[in-house]
Length: 98
Image 1 (cartoon, rainbow, N blue to C red):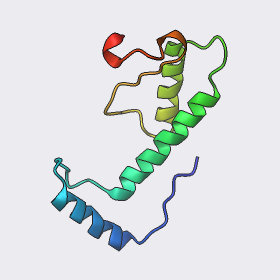
Image 2 (cartoon, rainbow, N blue to C red; image 1 turned 180 degrees about the horizontal axis):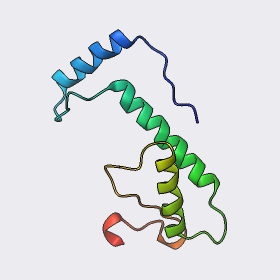
Image 3 (cartoon, rainbow, N blue to C red; image 1 turned 180 degrees about the vertical axis):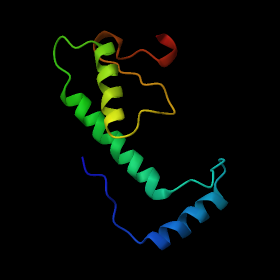
């Protein structure tokens, strides 16, 4: 999977600083627009790859394990949010409806 982004690094650093100044959220000094875009690209690629491997007989637990493995493969073993996979009869459940 290729996750490169084209662009001027200097202007990206300037944008990062501007985002930090204007943000209503607490953004640390380590925030990077390119880093955020890279993370988003990796996440979408992992979701697509995991979805392509879902076939009859795969359980939601199997899909979670697969997705966690794929995330680890691209260096994203640590995530901010719990990983939830829903399909079939549980698709419409909310997070609290586990």
